[in-house]
Length: 269
Image (tube, rainbow, N blue to C red; front, top):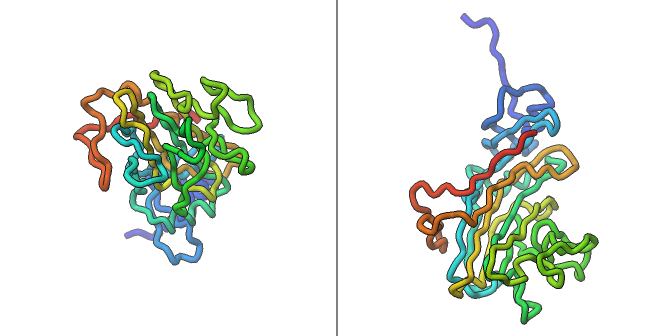
């Protein structure tokens, strides 16, 4: 007969599991960011690090290299390539509570391009690559280059305001805007909590014979530190064999069997 029953609390975040020493190993844990308990607990992947404490990872259905080809229209218009991001086993309200409870959150986004622009070289108001924030707002910057004012909008990390321009064409503010017939990439972290999570990506300028791209959206990562964590470093997509590229993603994405490409690798902590 048991003379003692041990109850394990469901903590609000993975960071709280670590702080309360209720840690066994990295893996799935129930968390309950909603302190009023109006929303039910949900499973999250927890990573525990002596350096960074408890890290909460929320996965989604697009954490792989997805091919973009055959779409010409700009990303903020109809009939462009569109990929909604669906988070696994968690509602948008639960995600918002997690973000509110965490000191920091971040999410990685990358576009690899060949002859595919992010911004039109002819029309200033035409943008071919867009992403939407958690509130469904179409953001006016590429991750890694959040603008400080309207004059800083529509830039990528290589051309971000206040830093030396490192783009492949220094007259542009994104590598993809060089419009080269060779593979380039623009990538970065979204770490403004008001803009998270990423809920949709849209692309165009991939209709020509020599125009194509790949996008990769990392998981939502939340933690109690103040400095960017950059937990995931995904492999480049450009080596993906043509016979395993993804098919039509509108309205519902479907992959070939075994099409688990460019999965993220966890950096040593």
